[in-house]
Image (cartoon, rainbow, N blue to C red; front, top):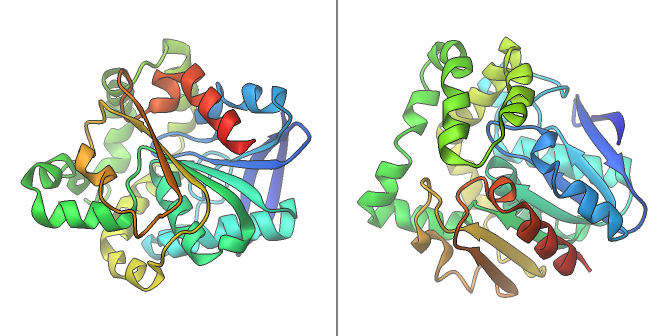
Length: 274
């Protein structure tokens, strides 16, 4: 893997790159970084793809701007648009998990010409997600944990203590894999950026509405069925929003589906990207 830094949208984005062929861009979620895709990168390279796995702003070796407003989802999506357009210079198969998945949904609506296909892992499309938040108490309760990350300063102080337990309970992470994440979480500015995603998501949630348009791209939603955060209903009944959609459900996996079922996810990505 080659490590690079791209100056885009007023910040520096760190990414790793390897392989030759059609471009696949991978976006991680909370609380990970590009290493989230450690099991999928070799499979995609072997299948003949050029693979780029980026650190979102605020994470790992990417820039960590200090303000909540720096983490608006539209701004983060523009980071990735600029990375693809200005640095990578070809349309991509875009793959995103968790926050990276929400950024991927948004980018597919804002700049579809930059993408060939879209893959999202365990992050609902905004339309069914908002629908279920409004009508489902169960979905509201599942998202209640986000209130913690909106508190001032406390999340930054406690994350090093609580996140290892979160990963152990929510996914099939090995001890050495959690250690890789702990090395990144030691940095206070990283923890601040991670929390700012939740703060900005609440503060600027109304900005997403103006960007909601149908996604015509071929789209794959990979879903770990044991997700404790999102209900199954958030993955149903939104055909008008994504008419060219396929859903692949993995029964034994949870929210961190690419770690819980690495071989299945790799096979799905390779087959769909081809």
